[in-house]
Length: 221
Ligand SMILES: O=C(CO)[C@@H](O)[C@H](O)COP(=O)(O)O
Ligand SMILES: [Fe+2]
Image 1 (tube, rainbow, N blue to C red):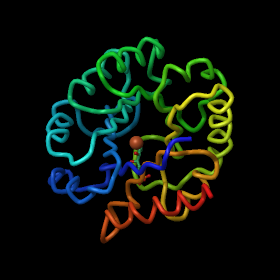
Image 2 (tube, protein in one colour; image 1 turned 180 degrees about the vertical axis):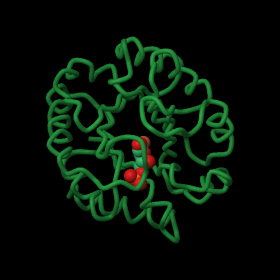
Image 3 (cartoon, rainbow, N blue to C red; image 1 turned 60 degrees about the vertical axis):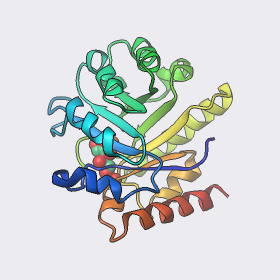
Image 4 (tube, rainbow, N blue to C red; image 1 turned 120 degrees about the horizontal axis):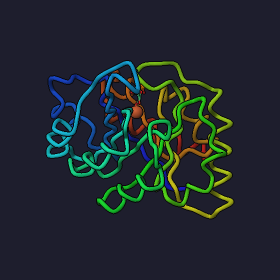
């Protein structure tokens, strides 16, 4: 398991001041950028041009979470926009192995996401192609939703699979992660934690990142 990383989502930050919003979180490991196309999920955010502008001012690398249809054709644009990690949804990819290889050869970390009802077992052999696996802990589409405990067994099974294969794939959780839920995720084997509303609703977002990191570290023992 890798070291604990906290990646705040800007989804619930002030979009009119994105540059200032990312400047408030220098203690983050990554900035999580939720890209939504109003087809794969019922919400619309931003595209590669906006992401490219954000990459130029962000104090830490961008972690793009693509909630878009036709990921096969669109994911590499986010590598070219300057993201250090690009996550596609397996439900939206026609050729996930080819896509992961294209993301890597374009120069970013390749990551694949699973919605809460998507099982991990069919993708066991694909894990070595990935730098990170994202297990969603809410239905994708919106920030501020309640954490789904039903996803915890899948996190445990994913971590066991990675251990079995002796691979270093990071295991990210996204959705409803807060001071109340992060310990459960860390105990289950996650090492990369997206937190949107928990960070941006805090008076001091950078202090919240430190508090989340301390809880996850403690839960690991
Ligand atoms: O991908 C998504 C939602 O689809 C997430 O990145 C959320 O935006 C995280 O926000 P919180 O659940 O932490 O408020
Ligand atoms: Fe996300």
